[in-house]
Amino acid sequence: MHKANKKRHLKLLVAIIAVSAAIFAVLLVLILGVYKYNWNNRAILAAEKIIPFPAVYVRGAGSISMSEVKADEKAVQKFYESPDFEKLGMRVDFSTDQGQKRLKVKEKEILNKLIENMIIESLAKKRAIIISDATVDQEVDSSIQQFGNRQNLMSELARLYGWTLDDFKQKVVKPELYAEKLTEAFAGETDTAVQEAKVKSLYDRVTTKKEDFVKVAKESSEGQSAENGGDLGWSTKDQLVQEIADKAFSMKPGDISEVISSPLGFHIIKLEEKKSDNGQDLVHLRQIFVKTPTFADWLKDQMKKYQVMVFLRDYQWNSGEALVEFKNPDLKKFEENLDVNSQGDPSIF
Image (cartoon, rainbow, N blue to C red; front, top):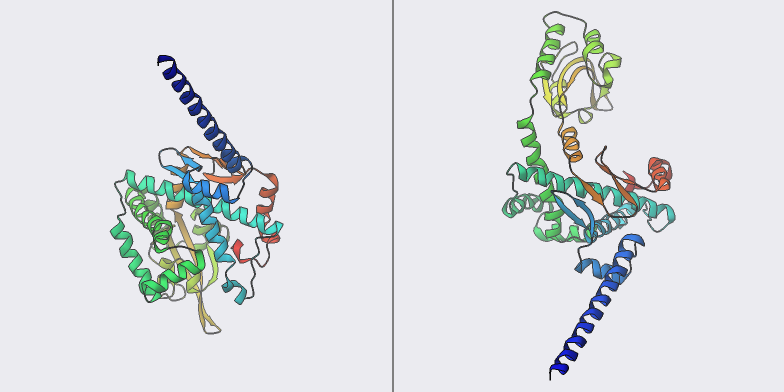
């Protein structure tokens, strides 16, 4: 009896080892297929739905699965290949060699956006900002009103992206709400006392002291317009930052505004001329500009502090720029010349 038990235990052990070896072999094949050979057959796609193979890992924030990246890429491809673009005389074809490269550029953009969204949520939660499902639902209700009813919105999401309403909530609405709340938190944390003191001094020079606006702009304004004495040229209302536009079109030629605050910084504008062209109002402005820390600059600095690992073979993380970039020199060169390589293709905009 003792020998029989030993034989049974031995057979069981051999069976367990055999099954384990088989599972390991299957996993190894799947891992090679996913990461090394970039297979897209049914077996790999089915495995990715069950096994959350990571495409990206962000230490302290979480991971992004291969299935999530591929689902977003599929949605982007469906959107650009929709009949809507053909009706406008624009055709997007990702099946050609050039098209496959353009799709790769889109995949890279998706990776960067997913990483940015994950880090924004991480930074928000560190500030005790939590977006509840109820808040998301309230925001979705606003979108539903724009489309007339829930069914219309769901139909458009399915037609354009292959999304459900829940996909829309998780992929678009929730990340946007986290970004909005984090932007508000950033504004509250940012000290602009130095910039405010500088712009008030410059305002005093061009108003109380009557110094030449062009001279002060060349000497002390920040940004590219300083080289031309703050000249912004002719602009329509839509072409200007909203805060500047709201003021500029209420001014008279020769007027100098008070200090205007915008998401970019502090502005003092001078209206040089006004005119109408084909029924459209335009203004010719000069500005003195003092840059303040922007949310985008701050976010980039924060993202540099995160350790990001990209497991996809075609990409690598550039920690200095806080961006995913191509490893392949040919794809890098293609992306640098994307406008030339993709003329007339709306997917590059």
